[in-house]
Amino acid sequence: MFKPIAHNLQRLTRFSGRDTRETFWPYAVTLLVLALAASALVAMPPMLETMAKMQRFAVEHPDQATVRQGPGSYSIQIQGSHPELMPDLHGMLPGMAIILLVFVALVAAAVVRRLHDRGTSGAWALPPLVFLAIGMALTPRLLDVRHGGPDLSLLPLLFVNNLLYLAALGWLAILLMRDGTIGPNRHGEDPTPAEVRQRRRSPPRPRD
Image 1 (cartoon, rainbow, N blue to C red):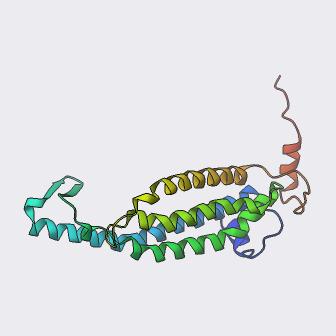
Image 2: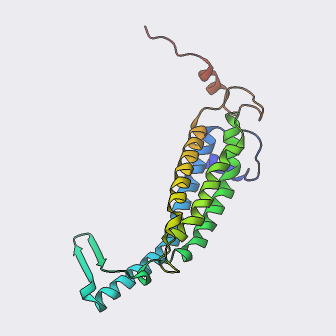
Image 3: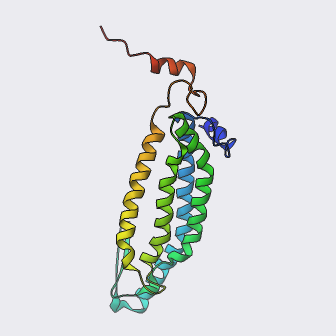
């Protein structure tokens, strides 16, 4: 577990060469878990602030709020339109953007080397980033109910963009999960241990 992480941290700026799945995935999953945890920490203060506002509103306007509380559950339903109670997405966006940039910076070279192991260009990692950036730019404007109201005209564009993002990300994940090419390719020598390469070359023996 720690060896793949150390291997990739030592090669943060090395976009040449090849890496196996066993070297790439422990590192990538660790970064993903850390990024999700950091995103939750960024989103937590605005969400807690929104919950506190809704609780105060329910106390001050009991005729416009329905509070349901039971074992392990608590909910507040507010009647009518109250944009002042919504979380401030614009406040969360800078933190989310920083987390995304750090994640991309840490994983970029490792993704390129894993693609190289397949004999594939590292450019296949770019489409998901482009669609993700577009989505992050449009989503706050679509969901903004506090600063001028939501721009619903962006909904079709955002829907198509998200579909393209998921397709590009899915294809990239498939490429990253596949076996590397056996032997040298245009990106360098095969990093797979010799005994593993031999098993991949040898067809399975028929059972008696």
